[in-house]
Image (tube, rainbow over all chains, first blue to last red; front, side, top):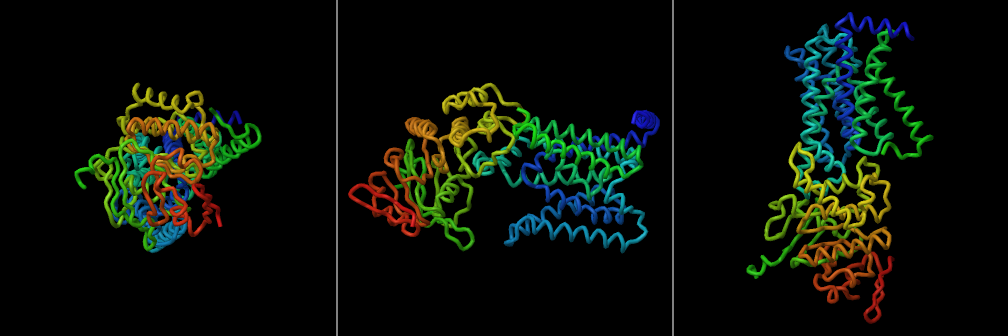
Length: 281
Length: 257
């Protein structure tokens, strides 16, 4: 254990790829922890799942056009989110059915495109499960910028977001454009998901959105504490996850998600058996 | 007729609202003066909530005309209308405190990216004192009794310093003390010229609480002074599908079928 820590610290000092990986993972942990609180409170976990899967065809299209994967991924992610809203508003299907249909369609399209193009140099495994150790300086900058934009966006609309989540009817009566607020949240969410792609990959990114915020939700009673605890859990899990994956040579994304899942399990047990559902005041 | 309209706080003419093929509100026409406390009554699914949502400018209506404070509902700014939601539409686990909820009422007075100012905090404090909940301002919203929570939502409406108040069943499932606090505050507001609509489900206390009454069952059945409207005949028409109305002299009882 101690030897592992020393080895890890030494390597962290020596190798820039490891530093970049660590930074990227912590950034993703922080941003996902914050936006995840709003996603959880608005019951949008499945929407996160949908957007993340729908990113796949966008990545392939970006590759074919020779543009940054960010652009295509954002685009197909957002289109899917809009499509889900459109189908559930214009049919008797609920959101969850619309989500089930659209995200699998987009995902299937991505898979077919990858196999059709062939030899693209796109590493499907990396997209699906992330490869944080391959994060370049450029990628890190892009991730940081996307996270910064998403966090600033959340800061600007946080009051509208909280009121329209808590009491949508009252929100409208005080003049909050609730539809525009929820579309803005979708855009920011897509941005965060695309920025998380390289760390945890599209299959596991939902865990970074939901598990830290759900853990914080169990432990706290006030939004500011929920946000803080969620960020700490997201960041801490990322650090421990990168460490474990380095020491034991296992997939980083999976390792981060497992750590955060264990944290949730501990919080659940504390909440259920020790505190009696009151949380931090 | 139009010359008197500016005196009315609320004027609704021939209002009809449908969702798809389902008509929720049909032919509602009434006007209410400033400082009136009006009860809205009718069976479940009678269009009470739809009616107030239309008045607040939240649902599109197919026919008719609504003027609030002599303006179209959508022209009013966020300080004019205060809304108190039905209890069971609130997520009790939401991580907000009593104080946070009341501060939401100050939304239209606050500036983006600026923290609440002294006058916002003052308004929150004063409103919480009025409903006698100031000592519990740091409680999470789910840790209150139903009556206490209802008082908190009324405090939020007070903090808004609105002209028009819409309350959706504020008296259901609450304790007697809370009910007294709420009704006396509503009377005080009406006395100060505020116009208040209350969706009400309980037949007793109607005389005591409301000076004016609107009965609705899809179609508007009657509107006017409570003593003129609250009659066995009108009640029988309002509740004909779902209830039996027993009338004897001035007394009436409405029993679910």
